[in-house]
Image 1 (tube, rainbow, N blue to C red):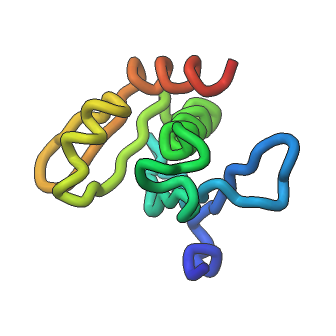
Image 2 (tube, rainbow, N blue to C red):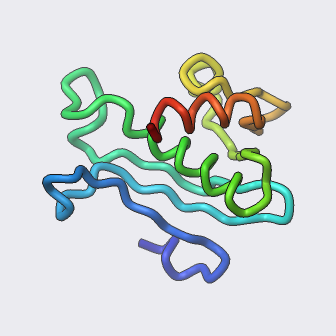
Length: 120
């Protein structure tokens, strides 16, 4: 994975408790001065589409990015670029705000909701 070769980026994998060897999804993050930037988010092939094994893999990874932002002084803010066809999906499913072009932002309020949902 080329993301691992970029020093400023931190790559995290999502696994399930009883099977840590199977990766459910990955996220590549860069901690900026005032937020976390999400460079890449991917679900494993078996977690995509109507017959996915687990629901909520992307939401869980984004919630982790929000949690990291809170921990590193970014007040929960996360930004990322979206594919055009997914902008509306991210607005509805994550509460992300479309701020122009393909730029998306998750604000403190939404980050709190996501972290409460995925990290009990």
